[in-house]
Image 1 (cartoon, rainbow, N blue to C red):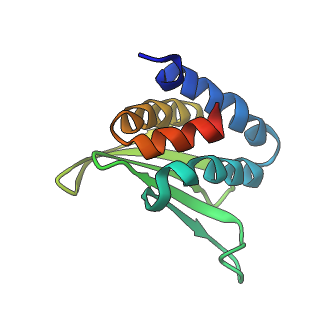
Image 2 (spheres, rainbow, N blue to C red):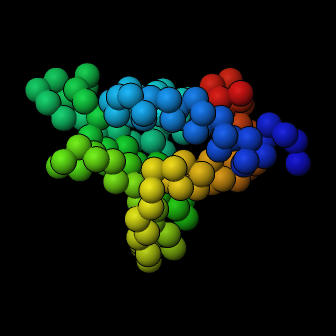
Length: 131
């Protein structure tokens, strides 16, 4: 396996590059995460915003659909981030697992590495944005 497609390298890049935003500003972290993932995922990444100008409003939830897995990161009522992973079979969610944001980043990095192995356009976009 090439180093660029190693899930550990991808996870470290996401955690280091995006985790900086988490420590200081939740909205910045979410914006950086969307900016990094949008080129690779396109319509597989859905972003929900709040406020009057929803297109430019704060991010409330993002969801990543990778066929057999759905990842979600949501801002709760108290402002804390809630991370979940759903296992999906034939369009039906069988299991939803809550996890820490750090574990979520690791899981999404691993899933994206696997997704990129079968979707060359996604791999090229990830390389431009993350590495």
